Length: 183
Image: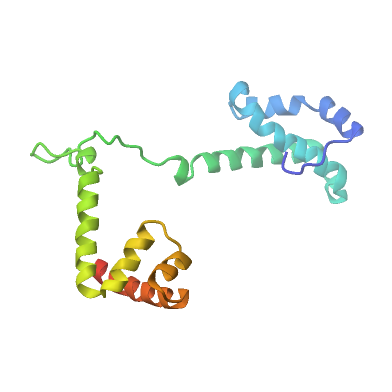
């Protein structure tokens, strides 16, 4: 129930006495009970709570208020069910991309890249090779140590310099690496 306040004993008795309104609503709308009861019952129970707590509703019959509450629950359900995220088109990766074309065509599966460990290693090696052409020997040694898992303090100790200097050198390497990746 949207308002998470439980019904009082008086409201529960009233709900039981007027429960046939739920079945009349479902019958009038030609909705299967087993499929839609759980949807409209919350509108019905919310209507009882509103009927007892909102004095302005005393001017109306409970039947009209309950009918409107069940109608709103049904509307919200159908709107949520038909929204785009629940009715997205599903396709198989084995389906042809262009089924109407005269050629054999290709499947979506054939367009997906296959992970190749050797190719990844080659790309990394070539990138490091290009990087070595543009940075100093000390910077390449720092990159090698950093990629081997050393922290900045350990690298600074090995290089006989400060961590501030190591950070500055690594920042310069990052800039060069960024340029390489955008070429």
